[in-house]
Image (tube, rainbow, N blue to C red; front, side, top):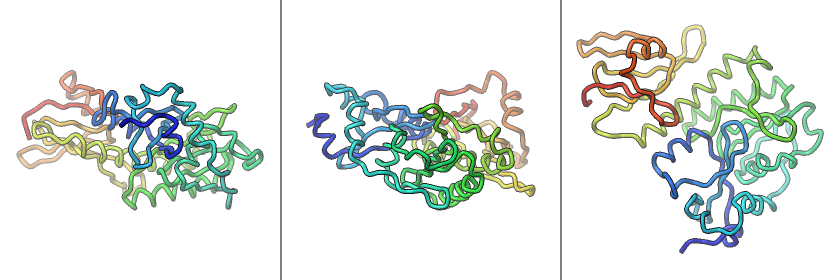
Length: 285
């Protein structure tokens, strides 16, 4: 029996979603089975799960008399205050508390940070808030992102957001922190690889090779991504820095992703998948 909105409010908790996870869910749980979410900023969305951890879907919400944002507001209304900052950082491991901050940034105490607060929603149980002017704290967040990737668990988003005029917007880290650019680029690549891993698990089929995105750290210390295309094989290829072309004769060659697309021309098709993949035609694997 479908629960009413009032029943949901009594037992539900909030759920953080990143855009890449929702992209996978649009493939595995489309239409009425897709989670109902509210956009909050950057790549971040907030939804609800019931007492059993099952997502509240678009189909469930369709029968509610109340607007979904009002139900979300009721669910998060009673969560406690955010903890105080420690060494310039607030680390939140409670998902509903994190969602409350994202939905209603007024929960962040005035004066907690000298400049605008920046949120890194790294994982559902690890949302970090720092000041936009605290380079040292931001560097520590980037280290934490590395550690979370190595731990192997699911990640949410590598794209931080900043509070601007009462709303969340993408944090312009390239302009603000050019000295940390390589570390930000590494984080984004790590998160993209994890997103493609989750997507690959859902795309498996016998007639198409699902190429994995992988990490390679160059001698210079720069983190890059690559995927392998078995030449002549039908493949769903992730967006990476480099494509390794494996010829059946046993030779390998490397092309940048742009070079690979240019060489394939119109034969290579951009799909509607999120995270984005391109279909490279060829024979069955």
